[in-house]
Length: 47
Length: 86
Image 1: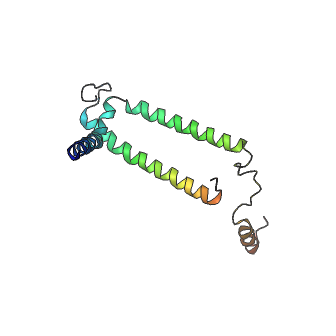
Image 2: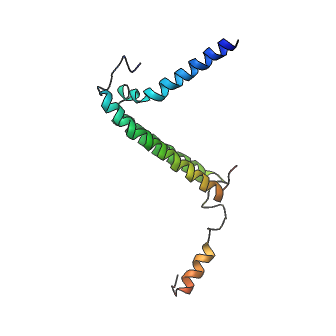
Image 3: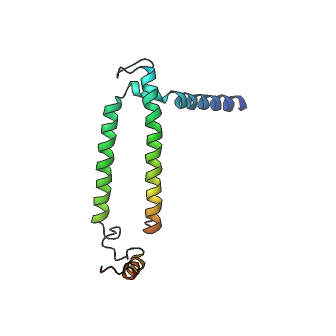
């Protein structure tokens, strides 16, 4: 789909560069959230 | 049957390969700045909503569940040993 449509006007290089920053940031956030839930569950188990 | 299974397996692997190598193209459809702002506000509102719901509940409100603060006694002892008045 994206190969046919370019709605944002980004070049392939720009899109790849943003993606290379976005994905580690997202995984970092997920790691933080999972860690917070593990610590919270150790202190206040809800299951 | 084995050929069909192998074909399906290859098709699935091919799909995942496409997903794995081409997801950066999403940024040609979604505007990055708008996506980041949307994510930011969505996560803030979601976090506040969950905290409000937990505080309004009876058994998941950690400020009023009667459970002691961890290491409270140890902290008080250390403060007393240090001569602090509080």
